Image 1 (cartoon, one colour):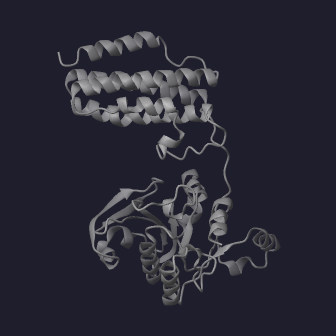
Image 2 (image 1 turned 120 degrees about the vertical axis):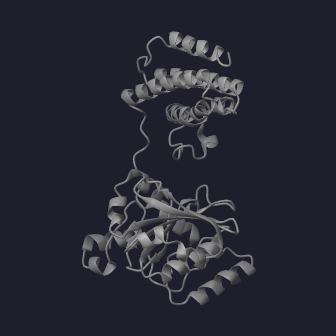
Image 3 (image 1 turned 90 degrees about the vertical axis):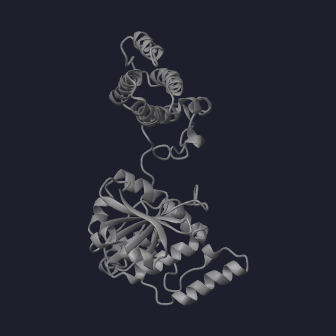
Length: 361
């Protein structure tokens, strides 16, 4: 059952909004529900019995993810290392009238590359008024003693989230949105990508029917404009960083080497994996699970691109960046049948060498 539910969360592709009672007369919707199933969560009234069932299953060495809430029969409970924390967060969200919907997302809800003991907990909360949750920290101590709490821009760059580190080492990200933002969120490819990997409704006070979006189109290779811009951006900032180091601005050069240049390099590695890797390979997002999809040659050379706070180390890392990016871009140019993106790369590379040779003089 738990496996089927998890599989269901990854397979479905539509998040249907609105109370279930409003759609029962719609024959098309009813037919869709019969053919694909649904996840329906109502506010729980028998929490104690549910917790006893979970504890009893664990004491017998059984998988507690197969224990179902007596009122939420279709929602599997996570058996991750953070299961007790997730139950605590569920109870808290149930008790907060302001919170209408709480979704568990990220590694705690995934079946592929699931959570481990070091994983954080990602919550997407939909509230009547997000402000008290984001800007009044009084509620946090009700969940347990904590070390740190701060605001940070959420992954969708649509607002803030509160990140809390509790004294047992568990960190929880509370991304809070207005209830009405749910429909808007489903138009954001990044949000849809997260939901496709799995989610679990913890609280659904308005009895919304939830299903995950279908797999979207396969990642597309870059256009020539995108590719050319990346190549020119990389070489521009390679020279810019070498100039900063030559001028004696070591910290600025270090940050550019390990930061911005590194991000451009990872994007090139992603495009290279897309062009040369097996079809259907999961490239995740940003640098997540980089070691599982990057070309083995990249993984061998990548350590040299990371600099320490010394001039010789930064010089070495910049040269390693150049070498790695050069062969990646050469192979991409050939595989994508693009014309050259840089005028006189040899002359540009020689100029970088002259700058680096003068460092420390």
